[in-house]
Amino acid sequence: MKTIRAAVIQFDIRSGEVESNLKIAKQRIVTLADQGVQLVLLPEMWSTGFANERLKELSETTPGVLEDLSRVAKKLHLTIIGSLPEKKGTGVYNTAYVIDRDGSIAGTYRKIHLFSPTREERYFRPGRRAVVSKTSLGPIGLMICYDLRFPELCRSLALRGAKMVAVMAEWPAERVAHWEVLLKARAIENQLFILGANRCGADGDLAYAGHSRIISPFGEVVARAGKRPATLLATIDLRTVEQTRKQIPCLKERMPEAYE
Image (cartoon, rainbow, N blue to C red; front, top):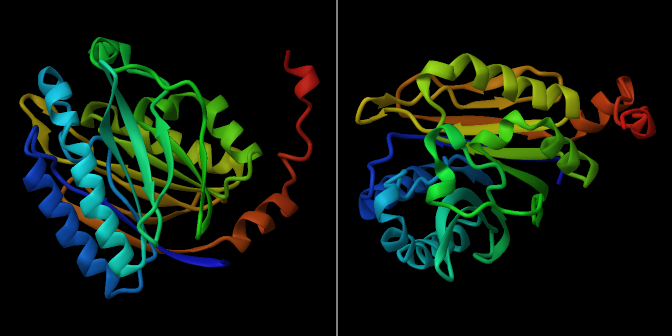
């Protein structure tokens, strides 16, 4: 598939209110189907927020949320990506799920880098592997929030064939400048499309940045949001990836033996 109509949904996640968050997401997704959208990206932990003390309880709602979204994806024939709490044994992972257009789970990615300043390691287990999900739209790399600060991860996704990388986040407003710069950097240095879905609004005293973005391999912001709830739309032309890499062959001219 050469072109993809993509959407990023930015909204104020209500902490612990799964039904409310699911309703908002579904309403937005349904309206996008009429606009020819094929790919929808939701923020990090979009069904629950970081209601950390209730994580194990709330993670039990995830299978039902996935079943509901799978029906939506199949009915509307679009791919949906977002991060949810995944219960596994006695632990919980912050997991990105890729629901393909036939309603199947095309891939999962467990957040590798847990944000130590907010002590995420107290509540979550870390993932152990990078993931490029093979979908009907092509290969899509997956990253979650703090992962964005680790260029090695995004580079590994590019080397594994990703031409798009989906970044789900709950990035705070006080570091919005970092968010914008890092999204651009990951797009430029890996010569691929970056889709960044960040939440907006606030959770207690903590304000979230919003500023979701879709960025081209040239580093151009092709769709942007501000601080309020929004839906971004853009047509992603995957031929741009090859054109960019042909024009400036960074990936081919890597010298990994010199970097040790």
